[in-house]
Image (cartoon, rainbow, N blue to C red; front, side, top):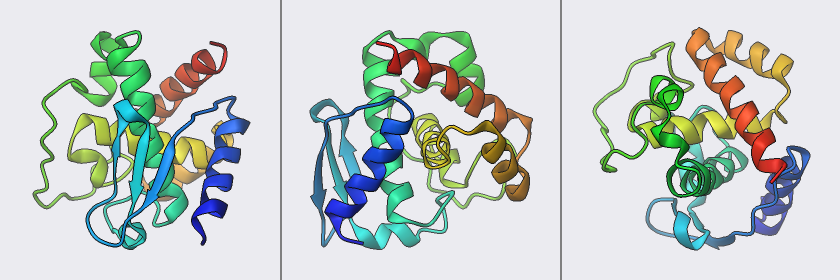
Amino acid sequence: MAFERLRKIADAKLAKLGLNIDYKLHYLKKGESGTNASKYTIYINPRDRSSKWLAVQSLRHLLLHEIGHIIAYDHLIRGKRLSRKPEVRDLFGDINKFYRRNLHIKRHNPDFISTYAQVHPREDFCETFAVYANLGGDIRKIKAFLKKRGTGPKVLKKMLWINGIVKNIANI
């Protein structure tokens, strides 16, 4: 999938949610995909799409995940400091915690959308957001996806919380 087409698809998914995020997208031949959230810059290495750790193996999911880092930075960490609210900590953990991924082998945990979501609270938010955005915020589709994956009620609570925050962001 060409990067311009990928961006158009991801931007259409965001627009359906009422979100417009102006980010720079760079292609990597080497290195790991990632985001400089404060500069709205996303680096995508296409080989990372096949990671078994992700909730969905696709470039679209990977891009939406990285966009999740920008949203987390703007609206949870920097903006309204939502990350300090008890419900955010209860759902995702301490998003402000020093970013050090715990890459030890993870097993399926029904409280997380993917094994990658377990490596840090920010990754939990981003993985959950990516699935939410990819499914267009459609709670019926989200419930079916979660049931198929064997997740527990906590993941649905995360999705519903993200649904609320997306609606708030879209109204800003």
